[in-house]
Length: 395
Image (cartoon, rainbow, N blue to C red; front, side, top):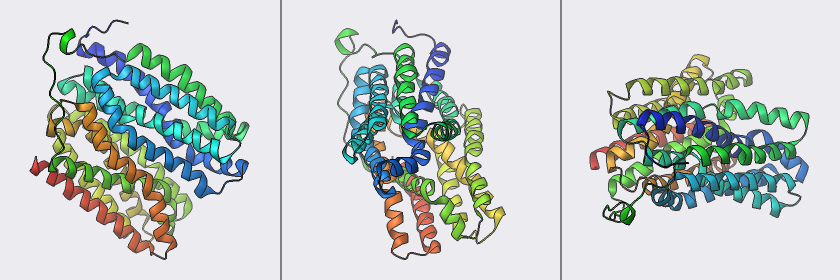
């Protein structure tokens, strides 16, 4: 495949659908499927649920640890080889899990999954896009990518359930391994460009090294980590929290089901306003919506209307924040070393996402009330909004 730069529309037509399909498979299998597969895995292997989810936590920690290195590799080599490695690691991880008969092999499978996440989820995909889709086209490309990838849970929760119901969790893992190898890998090889010629090959001067992070970087990293913490807690404990707030199980499931449509709706709105509104301004709206959503969560007290209003604000915020993560750093810090920058910013968020469900469980087990727990999350949301504003002003 030639790496000559086509026009921007041609780039988008070629790259976005391929990356979108691959991201649906990557997110759906590596991140979302544990919600369906976790119970059968534990029952089959004789593992407690904390131990099963301990493997998933290990994967998230490893994905955060490798994120800065992955960003630097994409800066230097382009996205094709790094994303291809993610597909191979994803296939290896699910093949290992499908064959696992001991705790050790089970954890090896999740360790490989963590490396696949670090090499192949949004941060890596957005860094790969950034190299070949410059300027305003990049922001719209990120939004288009998230619109497609936003259907990952919609596709993979039913698919995982169907595979487990008709066969078993090992068959599901084997199918996921085949999808990474037979779908993701060819898409990455055929559609994602390789490295842009640099330095001696193009006659351009060598780029200066990436400067050390300043205060604005750390404020932004703290803001993203705060909302990642809330996202991870709600992903694991939403039904229980709503139940403690007086919302029945059926209504709680409906509340959770509203997240997806609100994410898609918010991304469509962002796509339409992108040419006229700066990404940093959209970021303020997204962080404010998250703070409002978490404040609404504190006072539901049996109110179905407030529960659905919480879901609308939370879903819209989460949908836009995915785009903000990929676009705001370019406006604040420039486009040089962008892969490395996204990798560094992702590191605290991955760690927050990995540790949040466990830490929240410990707090609840220690006797923390539902009211105190939700107010703590609300404080994290308001704090994230404050950190984001400080990042803007400091920069």
